[in-house]
Image 1: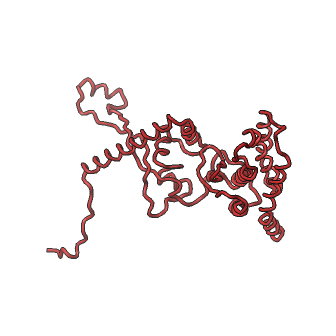
Image 2: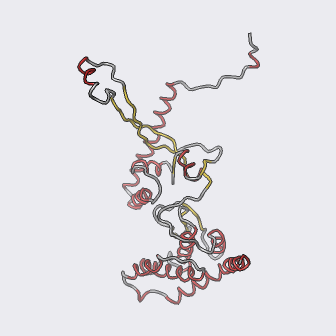
Length: 304
């Protein structure tokens, strides 16, 4: 008889009934979250736009609108399966557990045992007598915040590289701002500026992050969030003009700037544009990032 003390305890495995019960409870919990999320969205137009923006994110994934809403309802941003993240050059960090679920279809063939002689005869002319069925079940996925690895690339990013680094300029510009600069998922937009924060899309590449950062800091320094600021289209022209000046100084080629300014000017209000203020803010931003740019120029000269 073997010594029981030396035997390793058997790993406890949940019964089939336990797994079914857990799946049922989990489904009810997620469906309840989804219901509350949709109920809130129906009463809030801004929430509906947020959902639509999330679904429209270029290069995000091929999930259905329902699954996109499910992800948002559970607090997710960009989500993929464990295997898909690996295909994208990213790995789920150690210790992370999947806490977001989506509906995934599964297809199987059911053997039809009860066949008459006529049906069995017909089998000779048909490809088969199996019945194909499809069902849906909840499967776990991981949020991008739970992963690490290669930088994600999306279709909305600009082409080309900028001779400056986003992180370095962010630190410089953060010193002249009275609100924090954050990097986060911002849906279809590249970023925004509010009274409490400046947000830059973490989905953008270095060039787009730089441009968005400068544009949103310009909004902040131009006082566009203050009471009594100019019309929306005028504010956009002012902020983008500042961004265009600064990007030119940093040798960042951003082709969309001219189109952007021209587009907003079509709405009128050109007489309200504060050109003097534009130059003042552009000068302030350039002076705050100049040390970083000079450093890059020295490195390029040294390398050559």
